Length: 409
Image 1: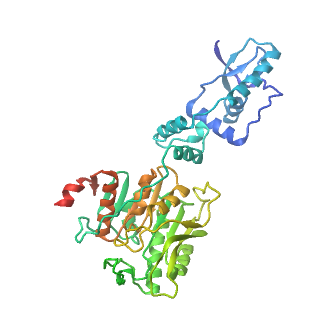
Image 2: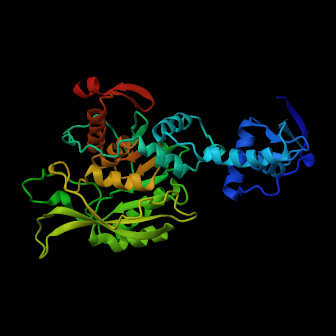
Image 3: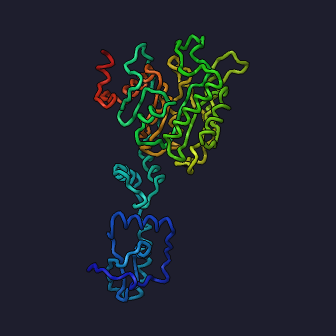
């Protein structure tokens, strides 16, 4: 069979073609033609009636093509009609090996700026398929002890594999810019100081360690939140899904600060713990509230696909409480990340703490950029990453750094 090129105006679409081509298919076809060119000629009869390739012809017309490649079939009218039906139906009878498809899409995902619509998929489709070959269970690791003296110094930028950590001030846009460079966050999960002076606790199970910025006057704390949320906004994409954990004591100030920084509130998620936290209050606390919404300016970048989820999240408290009294379980953070981001997306946490957001991101094939003000806790995050991955070959301010050797020096 010979492929020839003829003017599009000479072709006659089959008037009774039962297939309809919706807008999303036509958009994908046009992108495919632009990306790959003509790889599949239109099939026609001797009198130039289209037998197969109606959608390709329509896409070519919409793109302004004046000529198209064709193959002429030696078929009488009745068999040509039968082939129209066969061409449509036989493709529908194929079955897809989802695991193989997901692996191929994972390879394609390595191509910089590749437009998946050119192969007929949306980013949500691709992410769902990639998730199907990625184990969703995450490991609850044991955070290391906080060192008395830190290797990290204020201003350090660490590269932990694909992740980044800055020991810096989350209210300073210049320092946050050092962390993200030209990138912007696809999602935020963060747990700022609660302004409840946890470091002053007398609980014998918790070591006496102050949490920086955790004992301010209310107005000072509101200004602190305004500045940090301003940085968060500046370095997030429009529509960036955002989770902020906060104490009930400062919930009102947090809500106002987020609203003034152009964040849209959607839900208040309640983390219901398996056991209470002893306190001097009349009622011991057994929950933590989590603000959920997104940055204004666009619809949320990633919608929650599982429509059966509620705003009550039941996760066990981490058993290790000495490191930090507000440490979150990895599974809780992972639930937010898997709901509201895609594979290889950037997850931002400007209050790194013990590094749970980074640990969850790594296990879910996301990239975490995080900031931590306290050099000792920056060391905790690094050691926790090394313990999880076994990767000790890091970069510190752009220079190669073997963590174990330097850590033990």
